[in-house]
Image 1 (tube, rainbow, N blue to C red):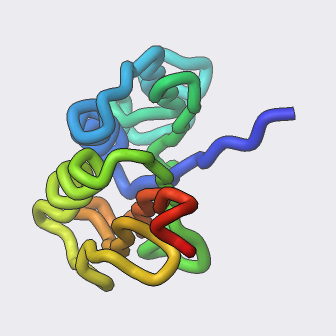
Image 2 (cartoon, rainbow, N blue to C red; image 1 turned 180 degrees about the horizontal axis):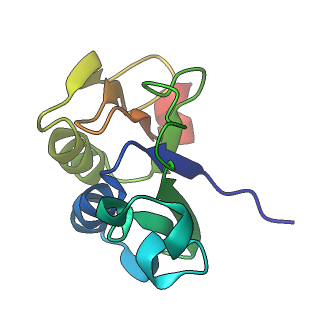
Amino acid sequence: MQLNPYLIFNGQCEEAFKFYEKCLGGKIEAIFTFGDSPMAGQVPAEWGSKVMHARMNIDGMILMGCDAPPGRYQGAPHGFSVSVSMKDPDETERIFHELEQGGTVEMPIQKTFWSARFGMLVDQFGIPWMLNCEQAAEAAA
C-alpha cells in the first residue's frame, strides 16, 4: 500500500508543480493536460492546457495533483496539511522560506519542544503545509 497526497488546484497546477519541483528538489515525472486527453471535447477550449494529472517524485515519495475541471473547484483547500519531515534544520528552514514566498505564514519556523524546527504556512497556491525537523533523541530528553 502507498498513501500519497493529491492536490487539487484552480488552474495553477503546472505552475505549482514547477514551484514545488524547485523548492523540494523533486522531479516532475508526468503532466497530462485536458487537451491531450479523451476529455478534450468535454472542457472549454481555454482548459486544453490545464492539468488533468501531474506526478512528482521527491526522493521516492510521490506528490500528485490536477486542476479541477471548470465549475468544480470548491475553494481554498482546508481540513488537511501536506506534512514534510526532515532531519536537517537548515534544509527545513530553506524549504519553509521558499514555500512561504507569496503565501501566508501560520506559525513561523522555530524550535519547539518536540522538534529542532517546525513551521506552518499556506503557500501562494492555497495549499497548507507543515514542515517538521526531527530532533535528536538526546536533545529531546
